[in-house]
Image 1 (cartoon, rainbow, N blue to C red):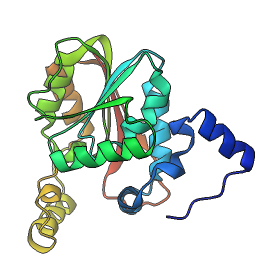
Image 2: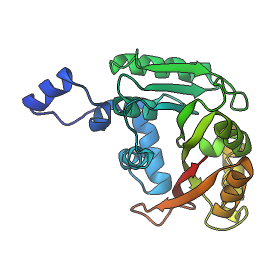
Image 3: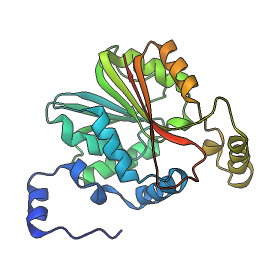
Length: 242
């Protein structure tokens, strides 16, 4: 993939003191670039801008203990690692072994292989003690997960005042829309993509109700505006404090 050439001074600084969150363009491999293009088509949002929103909202600082759920190739985890410092700890979790192995290789290529731990685990039984983590993050894979499992397990493993941060497509109306039903049939029958076909798109009211039922408080759901009005759903950042 083509990237802009860095000035010599910037290139030297990058090698001397790499800061992953500042060089996002260098972290998009071919697979991730394809996902970023699809993400823009669906939401009208730039994926790099979304990563910046996640980083800003997470308010990370050195020493934080962080887990990324449905980590996929671990792009979010790789961008956060430069912000928690050597004393912090980041774990990427996914239920798919092949994706975790790819994430491990990507982290090694980015020279942060020893800074991130990778785990294969089911969402309803995360391998963390109660009250251990400062931040649980989940990116664009949220809509393909069981939200109630994610919320309850996140609440269990977060410390008091810990933060759950999710980036997800959200229905602007309460209840499934005609567009969503057509979408499910399209992915099930034509694309044969069962993961996309089973995706859930909740309304803000449904998400707030499930988060409160799990025990969270101070729930904020903020819609992000893209550069197109074609998107069938609102893309939002969901923030909840334990």
